Amino acid sequence: MLQGKITQYSEEINAFFTTNANELEQFRIRFLGAKGIIKDIFEEFKSVSPEAKRVLGKVLNQFKQLAEDKYQELKDQSAVIEVAKDNGMDLTLSGEGFEIGSRHPLALVRREIIEIFNKLGFVVEEGPEIEDDWHNFSALNFPEEHPARDMQDTFFIKKGGENGDIALRTHTSSVQVRMMESGKPPFRAIMPGRVYRNEAISARAHCFFHQVEGLYVDENVSFADLKQTLFYFVQELYGEGTKVRFRPSYFPFTEPSAEMDISCTICKGAGCQMCKYSGYVEILGCGMVDPNVLENCGIDSKKYSGFAFGMGIERIANLKFEIKDLRLFSENDTRFLKQYKSALF
Image (cartoon, rainbow, N blue to C red; front, side, top):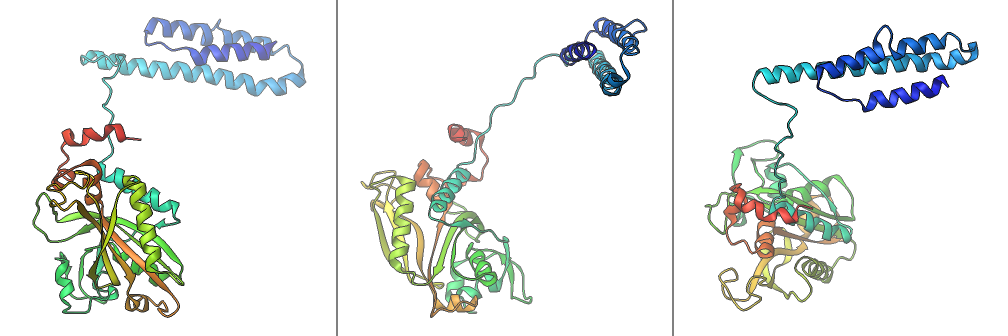
């Protein structure tokens, strides 16, 4: 019976709340006063058997502590409220609330790209944004004075060093080098991240942007594997029926190399400013990993082969959301960002 009373009164204490000083004082008198409930229960406790005392003693002390803590908590809250009232504030009013934010369109596209490649077994690898010459250039088949270095428009930080000049990475290919140096094939990974190039800022270019690069290295990897992987990616991202074409190209770290175009999602192939009235838009570069790159990373190029690809997330977002100015991605204009609230989850 005593245990039941303690349980009942504990529930009442837990449910009690007030900011009124008179009601709080009545609570104190009822439970903690000289003639209060706790005093009566302790008196009743004296008459229980010794066996029951061993069990109920701890419970009774916890019950008393619960009432004291509740009283002190409400007393402290009331004091804070009173101070606030003296300063013209009412803390009992409901808050104004905050407007729900939205994910950045680049974050949405990045997440979708990762999810698509995850289905194919690609894991995510990341690396530093400040890189040395070896990982950013030399290991990727960019010899010194090679004209391909001029393609990158690099932001250099420090000249010289154990592994050459230090610079902001111009591509996330440096993560591929680090991964291949520190592990053994097979590799199947994508490398999302921010990269930097010294370019004039315009509607179509920026000095920093975001990439997702991919690498697959194993025995007997072919260009057909590359084409089928990227074809699947495009169908998943832009929908079935999106046309794909490959054009021969040149990259120092792949041979053979290609650029991949898709049918323009804005004009549906009819021709517009985005696709320069060709009906197609280039979205990524790709190719078979050059044997020199594999050897530079300690991988036997006679046993292993692989493919690599790289795409700009901004370009993908342009086509997916029909955004025509790259500068909008980095200006933090809430009028622009609020448009993606519906895509929050």
